Structures are given as C-alpha cells and as structure tokens.
Amino acid sequence: MNLRTLARYPLLPETSAYLKGIGISLDSLVNHAAYEQVRHAGRRRVMEALVDGHINEYSMVSEADLLVELLSYVVARIIVSCTADEHLIQRYALAEAITTQKRLESEKLDFVIEMAVLMGMDAVAINATETSIHFTDYLRHSSDMRSEEWKLNNQELDRGRVPVSKDRLARLLQHAIKDSIEAELPLPVNDDIIAAFKNSIDLVIEEVARRKARFEEESYGRVSFLRLPPCMKKLLDMMKKGQNVPHVGRFALTSFLHIIGMTNDDIVTVFSSSPDFKEQLARYQIDHITGKTSGVEYLPPECSTMRTHGVCFDPDSLCKKKWLNHPLTYYRVKGKKPRNKSKAGEKAVNKESGQENSTSSGGQ
Ligand code: SF4
Image 1 (cartoon, rainbow, N blue to C red):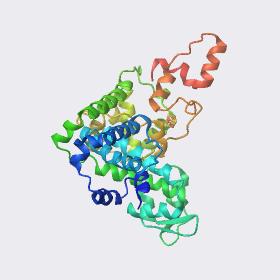
Image 2: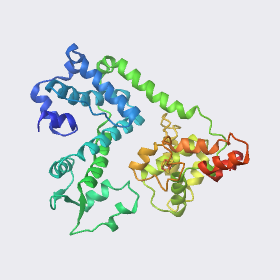
Image 3: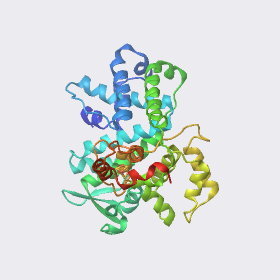
Image 4: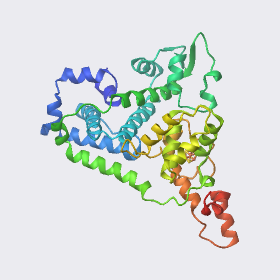
C-alpha cells in the first residue's frame, strides 16, 4: 500500500511494516528534535478526538505531509496510552473509527472489502455495488445497532451470508475498528516515554477533567423521571420488559442515572425489574461505572455516540434542536422553568420543551 493510503488509514496492519521499512525508531520519534512536528500532530490528533469526536482531514501535498499524518497516529496512541484513561481510550477509539468510516464512503467497494478482510471479516463482492459477509461477522459488528433495519431477521440471508451495501459494510467496519483499537490500548509505556510526553499528557488530562467537570458541577436538581430524554426512557422500558439491552445501553443508563443524582442502591433497584437481574453482577457493574470501585466516574455518551451505537431512540422535537448534543443537556433543559411568566410565553416554552417542563420542578 502506498504512503497516501496509509496516511488516510493508518490503522491498517501494513503501517507497522512500512515504518519498519523506513527505519524510524521509537526512540527518535519520542525524543529527536526532527520529529517535533510529528509529536505536535499526534497531540493535535488526540485533542481532535476528544473535543470534536473525529480526526480532521488536512491537505497532504508532499511526502513529508503524508509521513507526519501517518506518524501522528502512532504518537496519538502513545499519548492516549500514557494517560491510561478509560474515557479517553473509548472516545479516541470511536473518533478514529468514525473518521475511517467517513473516509471509506468515498472509496471503491474493492477497497472497503479489502479493509474488512484485513480487520478479520469474511467479506466478498457480490457485484459492483454489493458485498456479502458471513452472518457471524454481521452479528458481531451489528450487535450495538438496535434499529429494525439492522436486525439479522430482516436481512436476506443466503447460505449463511448477509448481503450489505458498501456504506453498510463501512458502518460495520466502524464497530470492528473501535473494538480493535479499544482492545489494543493502552500500550505498554515506560517512564521515559511518559516524561517525554509530559506536556501533551497534562494538556489532554486537563481536557478530560474539564469535560467531566462540566457535567459534575452542574446541578441536576431532584431526580425526575419525567425529565428523562427519550433514549433513557426507552432503555428503562426495555430493562423492565426484559428485552436485550446492549452493553452500551446499560452503560449509558447507569452513568446517566448516577450523574442525575441516583444512588447506586437506587440504580440497582431500577435494574432489578429486569428478568435476567443478578444482583451481585449488577452491583459490580454499577459500582465500576460510577467510580465506586474503579476510581473513574464515567459520563454517559453524547448523542452522536448514542446514535452511532443505535441507542438514540425516538428523538423528539427537543432532541432535534441543533444545540442538543447530550442526554444530560436534555434533562437539564427540561428542568428549567419558563422565563416568560405570561400564559402565551409559558405555552411557547412548553411547546418547545415538552409538557413535562412545567411539572418536573417538584421531582418525581
Ligand atoms: S437525541 Fe440525544 S437525548 Fe435525544 S434520544 Fe437521542 S441520544 Fe437521547
């Protein structure tokens, strides 16, 4: 594969062979002045993943530009590994996966299939626009997608294979890539590497802490189920009915209920209505997500991540506001009293925010 392709898709297995071939050592990448631009680009890559949720596309004219972009991926993984922060690892992995998916949409089908095969999927071309993958790969990589159109029983199975379009294959690849990066990180890093990247690590950790604090410092008032966004209502409903709630859905619900002020005991009670409830296991998972045993208080995913994982259910008119990007924002906005006390004003606000707006201030 050529350098331009590797710069756009640095997670390809060929990257490692390419870097070995041109003889760049880890030591020079970490310490040598000649790689200052690369280290800067690596830090920029992590910050973009953290703040924007994707990696930006830069103009890559010269071979040097391409090499910097490729190496920025290597450096970014080192920086993320130095922090060993689970929230950052997940966010970084998702950002790389989303970026790859978007880039694949402009590629030819053959290339997307090639990447799927490299990521361990059994994918073959059916014709010029369609491919098929083995149903086990389909199940594994569509497991987080809850919408009907992704369900296996809604696919036209042909001798154990599922036909998929190029864009759907790219979407399945996003899941495979995220899983793969999450499994690889954190990489082992020694004290010398941590010392060399100290400034970048501090900057990134500061941003992670700032993002977490943004939610923690805000008051969510008394817990009100009337203010829950549609996704959380649906997840709760699925739990009660004993439906299969994907791991990401349980994680989102637990972290959400924790942040809005529910105690771990209360969250266990909520989960206890599920027919497959096992108290010890539920308590272990809840204590981990809420930081009681892990020391890391996880935040619920943003709306874009919820959408990516197929757990953004029934978004309503408030969800569709341009600025609404997090289920916690939905909950907070629903708790705000209308500023205009006039009847007409109240009506206008309630129309926008939903009827619960005027009834939720008293809690559940
Ligand atoms: S848009 Fe956001 S808040 Fe609304 S249902 Fe989807 S994930 Fe939940």
